[in-house]
Amino acid sequence: MFQEYDVIVVGAGHAGCEAAAAAANMGSSVLLITMNMQTIAQMSCNPAMGGIAKGQIVREVDAMGGYSGIVSDASMIQFRMLNRSKGPAMWSPRSQNDRMLFAQTWRDMLEATPNVDFYQDMVKELIVKGGKAKGVVTGMGHNIYAKAVVLTNGTFLNGVIHIGEKRLGGGRVAERAAEGITEQLVSLGFESDRLKTGTPPRVDGRSLDYSKMEEQKGDEEITGFSYLKTPKPKQQRSCWITYTSPDVHETLKTGFDRSPMYAGRIEGTGPRYCPSIEDKISRFSERDRHQLFVEPEGWNTVEVYVNGFSTSLPEEVQHDALRRVAGFEKVRFFRPGYAIEYDYFPPTQLNYSLETKGLQNLFFAGQINGTTGYEEAACQGLMAGINAHLKVKGETALVLKRSEAYIGVLIDDLISKGTEEPYRMFTSRAEFRTLLRQDNADLRLTELSYRLGLASEERMQNLLTKRREVEEVKHYMATTSIEIQDINPFLESISSAVISEKQKLEKIILRPNVALKAVMDAVSGVGEALENYPKESLEQAEIQTKYQVYIDKEKELVQRMSQMENLAIPEQFDYRRIVSLGIEAREKLSKIRPQTLGQASRISGINPSDVQILMVYMGR
Image (cartoon, rainbow, N blue to C red; front, side, top):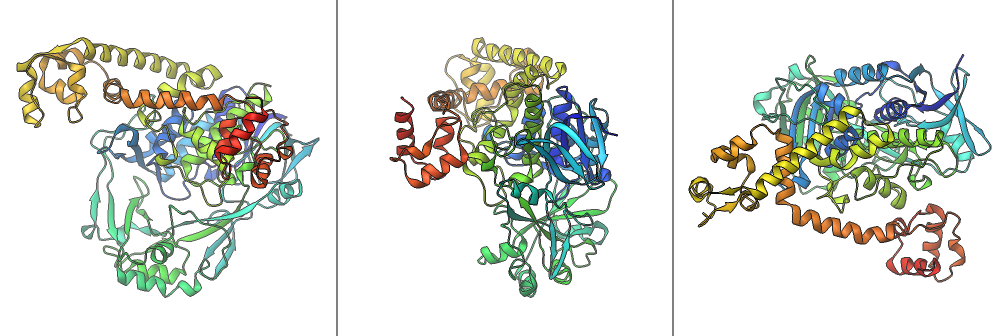
């Protein structure tokens, strides 16, 4: 009934979809197995993509030839570039999306991708022979063979849903949990643990009074995520902001004794940076209000997502408390909020390719690795799909460095440090964030992906054109002098010091309060010379000019650090014989088995003296 596939991907969430697309577009035959064909690429939590650091990840996935950026652009109902008031390293794109259109667009794109087959069933165990994953066994008893398997099970592994004192088995509301895989992997020597996440109530937007809320409109100019020329919406829908109050908090507290978290019925650790409303009240008791974002779920639905009100309190307590929020006095629920507890596998059990150390040809991606967020899942899926294909073809794995991508930071963090709580990406996690901006993801990654056979010819041509245009604009700024009489009126208008002799445009642009677009508008000669260049190329040239000193400093630091990154540790290196290492260092190095000294230096509990000792034993 089934052919032998190159790659089987288990689970069709954000990680699974990207994994299937990547492996297939590189030439592997792929079977995507999901428990429900109607929930492919479901936005299980908030209907949004991107945000702080997450937006950079979506752009990196897109630059590599992934689908998330294209799908986000096609389904967005609002777009905002966050942190515009800060430097470009902090700019982060974010879209509000139509939940149903997002999922449908993903399915359409996957169905249009050659080499991707689909099958609806549960996977209950792996076929394992000789220390290698050879395929899967489904709930209906089918043995399906493959050369590599990618597990992207999300929150479904032994998932349990909590609403107050109610406890239901399930991986998502109204969907059953997946059983069998955790138990099998543990029997094979894998370590598993439990995490939890939560989601807020969905409500009827017709029952809300928006006049009592603050309107939050999208940007007038939509940048979007994809480096391809994707269509953008001509109109946008607003989001809204409202706040809790002491009255809301007191009402919520009446249900704390029935909260699964406080009653000890939930053992898993929840996300520190996306706490439930009951967590917020407990941890930040000095605050008398918390912000709530009221987010529409799509173009043609009245369903609304109450961002910031994640909860697993009893349904009647949720309803009573939410009715005390300004604008929610007559709220009607579509469904209550709930918490979900699920199995994950600490990611220190993975190689940097996302292949498991304990079982060859088996890859993990997404929440099974302890992460939270669509974007974190998508980029892991992309990398797992790429590396599953490369493993099948007998080629070297692709490992992105911390200096190359946020994706590299995320995977390095997971494998060298592990995580005991749902991992979420922040710009602060990236020490080279000036290099890893959202505007230059294509310049960093597309050529690499193109050489792998993933990024398309169109993407590569777009990149070459952009590079040429950026260099032309930079050359123009470096060689064009601006006359006093042309620029001084503009400088006076923005309270910037006037010039006493003509200056190169490049020097004027270096002023922090001077924007290239404003100079183009003020000085006709400059405007005429540069008017035919795309906004993206002009912006890139300006950023490179303004921040070149900082960019060069980071590149110099990367160069210095790369000396350790390039010092490979032999695969079978015996750390236990180095008695001068502490017991903790020997245990962690033996367990994680870093590939380089740089990776070893980032393992929690490994100090600089340990690294020096390793260098001595390696003959350095």
